Length: 177
View (cartoon, rainbow, N blue to C red):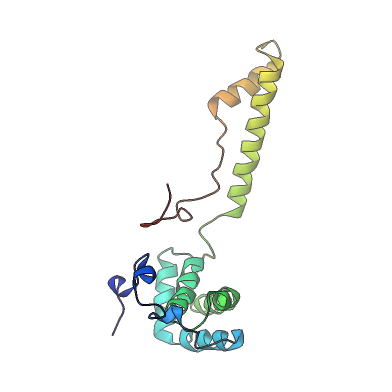
């Protein structure tokens, strides 16, 4: 029987159910990290599973959320602890990346571009310092360098990045905000 979105626990369900009634509240089936890694490698070596993941990667889904959802399912089913899943995640990631790339599909590791983020952060730092410099020096615009700097600051206001992204924000019944 395939699981659907409605077969999963809802937030707060463990607070109203009988204690130790759910798989994730029981001791895990596998306590050894090596056993957990072996379990996932054996399961993911199935060609149908690899084809499905390759199709997702071809559609533009990055590999990081695929790996995370894979090991979190194991936690929810009581196969292993969350700690073991996090430790095994790089092994799952490397196996899937290598297998999918061997099929000729380009794999995106995560949805973030580190070079683009670094450039954006550098520009934000520059704009903040430039704004501070303009305020400290006053409004004397006789210097052409100050005029150019003022035009740049007016054209692009500094953007202070938030610590959390849309994915990181808590959601659900018990979320604050």
